[in-house]
Image (cartoon, rainbow, N blue to C red; front, side):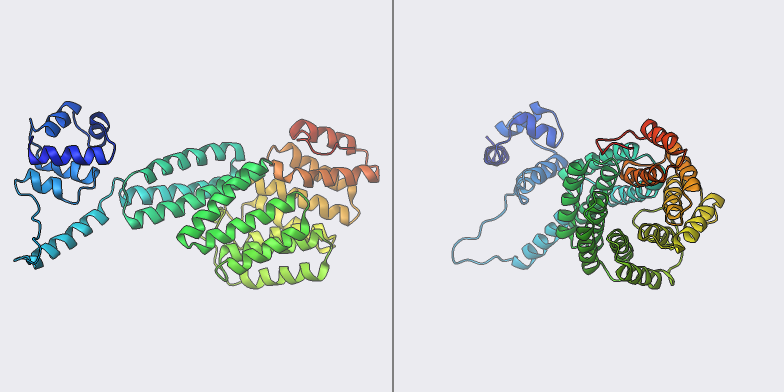
Length: 405
């Protein structure tokens, strides 16, 4: 057996690799690997390099294939050319650090795809978007199984954090809370491992929205404030978490705290330019602040909510801030309905809510807002209440929630 074959056999045994498995890793014909191991064949320089890489041989196989084994230093002796050996070792370490089966262009294209998914979120049914996000998560997992540079590995982990966060958001919209929590934990873990404060803050903000939709308003306040402590000051996650805090205070009926949060959002948003992709879910669009103000004031029962809600809906329908956003428009109609109820205009509230419900654009995480309108108009005895409730059942179902009147 040749020295190359002996070392190859030793390395394969040490790494518990069979002929066929190693052949798939290189790749090459299994029979050729068998011949190399037994000394019946000689590798090409390229194959020797590939085997050296796959078996993490540190250059030994490459040197043996070239006809000279790495020299061993005898006790008490020094290398005559130690400087050259040090230089080669440094070069080889750099080569191995730069070795990648992924490539920076693949990483960049994946990052762009994630931006496209986050931009598609406001106008795509959550179940449809979730399927696309899952496909990219699977692809990213396969990339992480391959050899990457350190820079590529970190960027892939960051991308995985954004994808997990977006998956959690879709699952919250679908009221699949346990699965959403699992994805949020993964996103938070990747944020910690990469030191990505923005993702970490968005995880908390998203969790705050999740508990807000389940009625745990004080906890939503606490988590929103925690998100602000983690988020980079003035960034999108910081602004969104501040707005989320205001909505939670409104649900608690705490008017001073609500208005203080709205004031902080206004101060943060006023100097911001419109982003190049306003629909991107994780880039704060200043136009969102009016919609959040309308929602918050409507929940607070503030008379000013009606004016804000009408203005937001008019802007959305005129496409003054960009292309049509049907999901935002449906939510804006629910906000206007709640504001109209606070103003005692229950008949118009019923008609506006009916438009929202029959649009087919209300996601499950907003069903509870529709139910609030339905209950309010039913309690007032509005004639359209029964038709509104029936439209809700047909379009949304009860989803395991309390029965409607």
